[in-house]
Image 1 (spheres, one colour):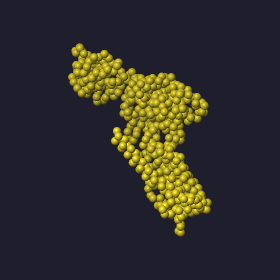
Image 2 (cartoon, chains in turn green, cyan):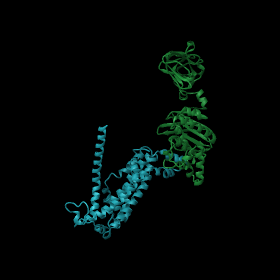
Image 3 (cartoon, one colour):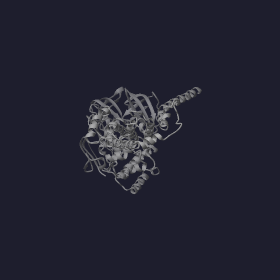
Image 4 (cartoon, one colour):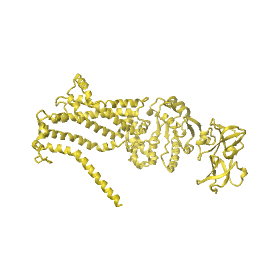
Length: 354
Length: 282
């Protein structure tokens, strides 16, 4: 068990900087999620820890050991691959026992440990099968069992849930979280799914174009996004981002949308960010609304209704009550509470406080 | 309904006819050699042709394998072909793996691969005089090892390229997983990549074996006596100034087909999978 430390680490493929000057410390026993769109450098960051990509510049530590030039086998990490990377010619038992076989653990001891782990992830009836005879969820469990059969210093998980169907993904997510809590092993988890990041992580590092845009607890990242990218990436449905202009604390957007009360801010090229749950649909009290428009669409998700209207070219989505009864083309008002809105500078793409 | 059934039947008939023609074209020569090897000389040339040996005899087998040294030729062929195949397979597999997996600066992966293949671009006969002189200098003429070395030089580029393409088709993540699990690169190669490349190994082995077994030109120049001469040379030697011994040629030729057929039969399951490995994943 150990911390992982990136000290000004860069990775270049030719002239392309996949990871640029990354400085990040992952605490002992921490569950850190690297979140970002594809190509943001999150998988490269993880593969550097595994020793599958060389570090171009900077220093990478596990515990107190600088591991830049250490072979994967001496790093004592375990990894779950997105494709699971199960050895197709070996049985489930041999797959799970592979790390022990490589370490020359005697066969009887190996069998005992494999059975222990298999019981833990509920694979015990399937030890004699080969990977192609397993379902997706079972394969995922084999990959997991192979990782936890020894107690490595760091777990690395590269989108481990992305190949599962939605229902199984939710179940495995909870199991993963519990397992990490039980084993207390430092974990780096890569995903592009912000729900996974929010639910699993102690801390989330939101990555974009090779750099960390924001690092913090899930709650902080959700409630206090520091850049336009983070604001747009976190949240489902995503935050409404409305282009406009702020003069003396008053936002003027497309289609006559006006939001006053933004302090004394003046931003000529601004983006107003409002989460769907922080914008209200008002039907009968037009004076409270910042803006009125016909309903573009109303979608019942079960727990709530997503109501959208158009402001110029921008589609605004609001979360309304599940009993919301409006229909297409009905005129509704939109109320945006300035204290729950975020203001960004469209040039620097950073948050503007007000 | 009936029309489609009729067209299905006619399709089947057309396919059956095509297969029958192909079978006759490929199998009849084998049958004819087999038949001739059991006929007396006079029957081999009888008009109309004797489709089936009327008075079967083992005379030609006796002549070839007891009176003449065809048994020794066969043994030489077997040793040379097997040694060539093993050496080509071992070296070609490792070279192919290195070309498929290791990192090379710039275009070097392509350049090295192309250079390896380019050694096969000149006709073998071009190399015969240098090879003859080299083996003469090393005092290795008329030895089996000279033939093995020359054959390996000609088989290795193909073996390397075939194995390279098989390794490239294997997902690299499997070896990465093995290395993160605590294995070395060499261990990942031995325990993960190699077992998965078995179809490729089988295909490459039979390829090398057939080429070495059938080779004539190099063996003709590099060998002199039955100490190192192979079956093709022995068979060609029965075409003499005065007579062509068709019976003996048939007996030895038919016998020479058998080991390759047995080997092909043994590995054919792997071979078929091997040849389609790149096209159909999984």
